[in-house]
Figure 1 (cartoon, rainbow, N blue to C red):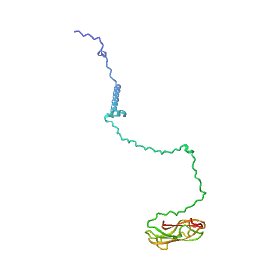
Figure 2 (spheres, one colour; figure 1 turned 90 degrees about the vertical axis):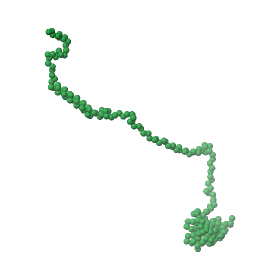
Figure 3 (cartoon, one colour; figure 1 turned 120 degrees about the vertical axis):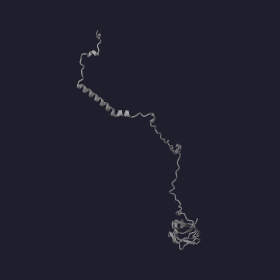
Figure 4 (tube, one colour; figure 1 turned 45 degrees about the vertical axis):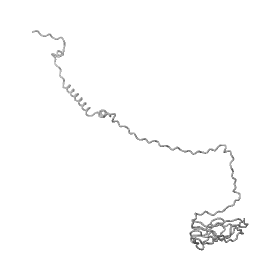
Length: 239
């Protein structure tokens, strides 16, 4: 029986034919196991605890456009109307007006003037306090000599609704020339409405020659009523 022909092509079955296959050493085996253990450990650590940036990227879902919060529109107050300032027109003086001559008021302080004496103002007179003059003595505008004694009297009637009692009503000097000796005169008795009384005052003519007027009045508290007056000439004839 003939043998098959030998192959002329080299092959792996022929490379190690007749040779001993080398076995891995103990050190190489341990090194391989150690590397495998390190690889498994790193893989386990990577799965258990990822770094913060990686964990955020992995665990945080990307919000969809539908879940995006829409901004809330708040009502913006409309601007209120600001009041416009009103300018007061300023009068402009024409230049030609400044060239006109101004009016000069003469100084009359050195000229003699005639002083008119008026009675002092009084408060409002109540309706209940009133009088009517019947006669007076002397009459107005009578001429007297300087320092003449003058007995003056006014006859009046109480035409009001209140009595003139002696405790609250007096006859007093009101203003004008001071011809009297005493500025007040007390009533001798109460004067009821409708009654008549003569109000008497002792006076003296001044030394200077001129016309004098004196004013008198009944007074109750701060109210002056029934105002009377007397005018006389001193050292000169009547007008």
